[in-house]
Amino acid sequence: MARSPALLLLLSLGLCCTGAQGQRNTMEARFLNRNMKHPIEGQRLELECLPFSSDNGVSWIRQEKDGKLHFIVYISPLSRTTFPRNERTSSQFEGSKQGSSFRLVVKNFKAQDQGTYFCIANINQMLYFSSGQPAFFPATTTAAPTTAAATTQSSHVNKDICMPSSEPGTSSENILNLYCEIFIWAPLAGVCLVLLVALIVTIVLCQKTRRRRCRCKRPPNGKPGAKPCVPTRHI
Image (cartoon, rainbow, N blue to C red):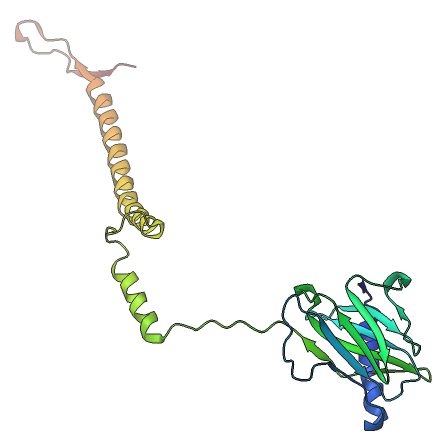
């Protein structure tokens, strides 16, 4: 399918123009099966466009959730189809006119076919846009856990976060035990490192102090007048 950013602007202008024309110029795009709510993957999805004038051709467009628009097919009043790149046929879509209804068929509905489908008619040089028909897979809902159960589980985790695992082999509990060991041993290792550095500094200072020696000349026979001792330092 071809993408055209300009189609978004045309869609906005067309919706305004359609609203100004009143209820008599309305168009409708809908599932051919009126009881259908959501398509399922792999099914043959049929849609129909009901314009207020069947004398003009109709174009089908799909809009994604993010706003991107894709041209699908143009169906002429004579039921001739023109697909992107001027192709007459498509392996994914079919188009036809039956009475006053312009029909689009998605042969094998897939995830990439989800979106909102519109039909557009150019009548007297005016663009008219239909209402959008959403075509999405049914939403899958998962039951949320009750508050009591969530609170119990949270308290159980907080209580046993640093307790040894009673069931070895569970990766989550092993990771928690590893965190606990890191929190315990990392500060102890830091304290031991500080003590080791302090011990090394003390030993170095003691070695320097011991090198200082006092070399004195002793007075012979204890005679007075001898020079006092002068400490000498070995370099």
